[in-house]
Image (tube, rainbow, N blue to C red):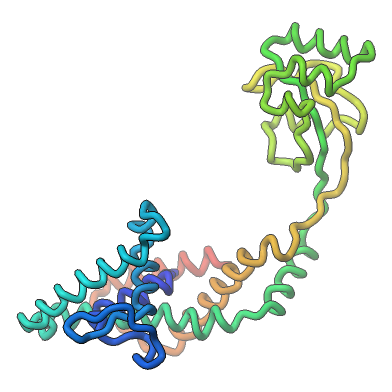
Length: 289
């Protein structure tokens, strides 16, 4: 599946096909920020340029980006005018590029207007509810730990705490880990978020208890205390809304392409190329299942 970024492809098509001489909006609907030999550059084109040239603008202070984008557009417009004077706009290779870039632009514009903008909050909420209902219950643990360099140090810590010392106080005094100043507090975590040795020991403990033996990991020796265990709450809808939107867009795009291919008559002249194409499409279908 080939997904082009709509913003980038739309600008690419606009720049190459129109030489920046035909804005996306009607001229009377777009603010003119500059003219070159009487031909306007609009605010819309300026914003498109900043979207297309985004990585190059990352190092430019935000208050100077409009001027940088305008400088780029002026350069493009002047060179495009020279190309037209040399009749390069009539060149066969250029016309082929125009045709391809136009199709890319339409591809992106269709995704934006017919697929992305048709996705409603109701669609996203339905997908969210489906994901939540399919989500298996997952336990999470709230733990603290004291990290030291040697096993002997860890055993001494265990003796101190079993003798009545406060875990948080000892953690602040002796833990070499970044959580030491906060009493060794690691907050809540789920399976897969900690190194296996630590995780196994933590999930085996009951709330309020500590490890009877030091737990060795790549970081050193740990003494672990579990404060609480609970079933993990699913992420909030707003937290993953954009992720769900992307997922649904990919799904609808894939379905649209599949239907369009099924309805189209596609002929490949080279048998070897056709075989490779079929193999590629078959592998994509397998991945999507």
